[in-house]
Image (cartoon, rainbow, N blue to C red; front, side, top):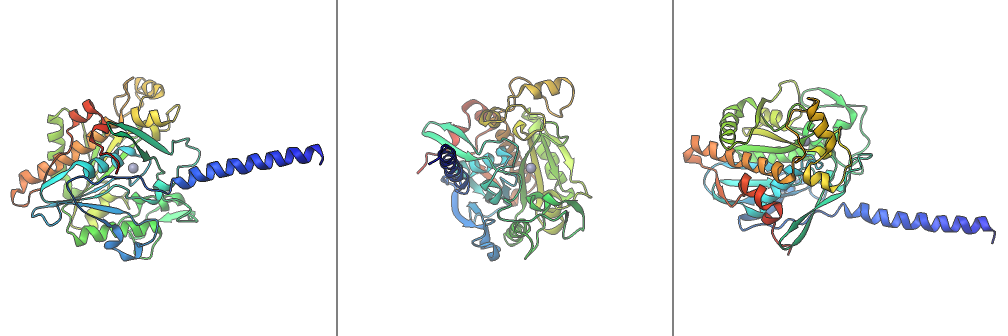
Length: 375
Ligand SMILES: [Zn+2]
């Protein structure tokens, strides 16, 4: 055997080993995270329960129902619409693992874009997951992509035309879950998942829908609630309630000419009161430096501190960053305050729960203190 043959065999073997290792790590992303239902969960059903065509597709996803059959109002919380925005995902999980309804019903979808959790955005260098230490050992959660996995929906058109309005956007937005509402039967997978959520809202007559997001610290709509005109009164009271707890939050009306978003279409097409909340996530920002698990968990980034000093950001940013506890705590405080404001105005149709960690408590004890031991 010639020397170059041996070199070729060695390289083939090395390439084969690399493919096996990376392939296994890649396929592991398709295994959903373990979520441990808390004492308040009455039932876990799949979204296909409301839209059977989703059954067996990568878009089908778990719906956790808390306080099923209780009298009172209801709320739907969507986490993981964009799986690279972890505070919404974590807030949904903390609700599932801790909340107990005293009146009304809570529906929680922690992986609103289940397909988006099975891959990462190319060329972003984002971690595939992040680990939270708990008193009972580590818990690992997926850090996914903003969009539906192209393995599940491909190819993208050159131009994405939003079905019910005709609005045109760039082709890749066709896989953006928050541009697909109100969704379409027999549409793309992304549109069908949106359609399934709309069916749930209509069938269960969901009173309030909260879509949890994060945004780059340089994005203008941040640390904010975006509300449909119908939900403006409720959102205003919520903002006042949060400000009284020293949680600074902006209130933005849902733009009329930006279509396909939850806070616009769910209000136009259903009777729910839709709001969307944003927190500041450096790990999805464009100005960030090193991108790793630590950035996801702490939000500490010297380039964002510099950008803040140059007046380029829409949120305060110092050496303390914006830890995941703070961002998740903002979402939970917003949800708690929305329920409180609703109940204050509608005492005959109350929405009340206990067990959800308060903002200060979460900062003090950390996320791990509110995650259950794995079975
Ligand atoms: Zn988002």
